[in-house]
Length: 209
Image (cartoon, rainbow, N blue to C red):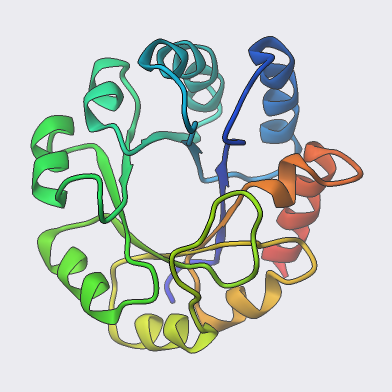
């Protein structure tokens, strides 16, 4: 690897109190290095996504943290976000790229599939995401990925890979050692018993080792 592993935050699936979360979000981003944030809200209206992005995206971008929207290249482009993350059921990489433009980030979920990852990388994806590596309550995982998948990818390919699924400060090191370029964390930060800022600080110390 040419770079050390970096932290990739995913928002909780619901933000019932956006103002309160914005404060927690700001403190978390100020607590340690974060490379990217993905806004991933489930079962909400487009207006809810817009409101969350308009509130959170400037906080991230002011700190040089990339801000992506899950599944919705149209809203990412409309709202001036840095890019989009798409799943296998959310349209194609080519469609997303056409919408967000050549300079935006487009990441692709590849589950536990080497074939999907190679296809995404060949198409031009900025990163491929593998998972779930550990049990997670944030999202029902479609697949379970083995750590060897990260080792294989890191050895053969230059497209960055993201490890996702149930990652905490206690289990992340194996994924980092296996070659993940990014570790994507949701509940492992936002639901940490000592708070999100403490979790980000601890992840930063782990990734700096």
